[in-house]
Length: 467
Image (tube, rainbow, N blue to C red; front, side, top):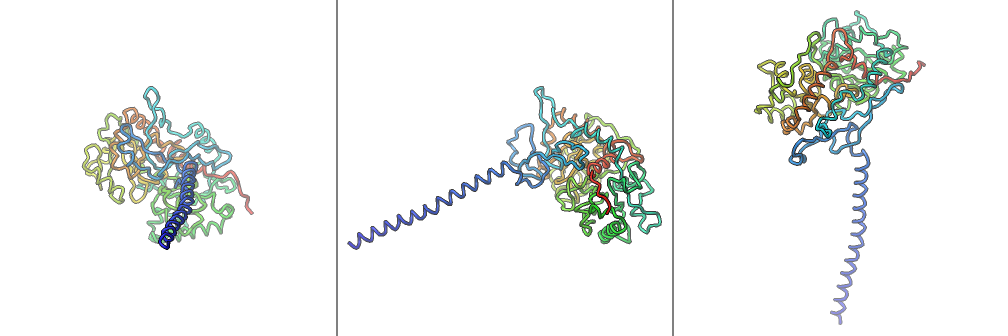
């Protein structure tokens, strides 16, 4: 009897235990399933998981996409996000339309029509009609006030335009100031100004023995203090209608002691990496780094005379360049060189279909300008690069943009383009290169006017009265 009772007790206890387990398991499973459905819904209907507002597109190949599709990476976004519209900085101006692929992302192969011809990526501008109309308005009405300094100023070499012809890697900074100083955009009446120019030169500060690298941040902090205490214009907007121009890479840390510049002022800089917290896309603007070739006419080398597939030469000063050289240094069609060439750099550019712009210390170098000048289609391998004039120009129509992780697939990506597609890219390079040149006297639509248009987009239509 006792034994029977023990058996019944054991069985009933096991049933109770199983019931308790089921009681806890079922709600847990339901909660987990519900959470997964919610997560899936959010990820499919929201931009919450998109790390940056710039739309980046995935890379596509002409042939056998499944072979390497799992290995191809987007340079910024792991998923595709919705297109972002251009920001209207002035209620009186119009947007430039949808700014797709504003920054450096992965190349999107052109679509084809039923007759097999390329149907997209042929238009250089996002909206050429709006650009043309706004360009006329800008030329007529846009005014800038440059804070005045004279030749007796102890830092006249930093604050005044140079008297010689700008040269070197950072010439864009000096070209802009010198050209603006002689242009019709400049006004001596602050009440008529749309924007206010802070004319310090970071490149020249770096080489001034009184300041040097360590003193640049203090100089700029003190300069803003003096401007805000001697003039009323900075304080009425907190610096939002002020801008400075810098092409030296040290510019991204030069403002560390002047936080209000980073937060409010417009930064026109060559080192336009939106991976860096100091650069704010849409508020700030990307300045092209261009080696000056003021009077020389660019060569016209047809695509049929270009025998090399791709070319790069430069210092191996970044992991990206190191990877490029390790992967392709012994290849017959892709010519890559670490350091200086023993032959002509210009001839190498003219002999190549594609010229590689590869991130070094910074995302920017003068190689894009070099490629344009010599009629070579630029291949941009520099993640997070907010490309120059991307508010205006459709970079997909005249360049190839590749994620750094896709360097091993470089030959396949470039080789997948048809002759017609390359011809379209090359034709557009010849058309767009006028926007990437400085002139002693500015020429319509050259680099100076394009920078002015970027600034014009960022002006405010609201004038804050002086108190």
